[in-house]
Length: 77
Image (cartoon, helix red, strand yellow):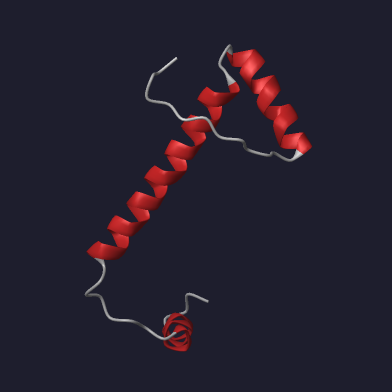
């Protein structure tokens, strides 16, 4: 076990817990490994989203109605 780990109590929906136990058994991995990987992936996705927002900060804001009107005028919807 990694010595830089922290213990936490997490409550799962019973069906999710069952699915995690089954996946852990099938993949010969621990529940902790599966949960850590899922959390890491979620945090990485959040970081990617924040980076995309930062890259687009100078783009103009377009009202929804204007976008819909433009799509209709161009025959896209």
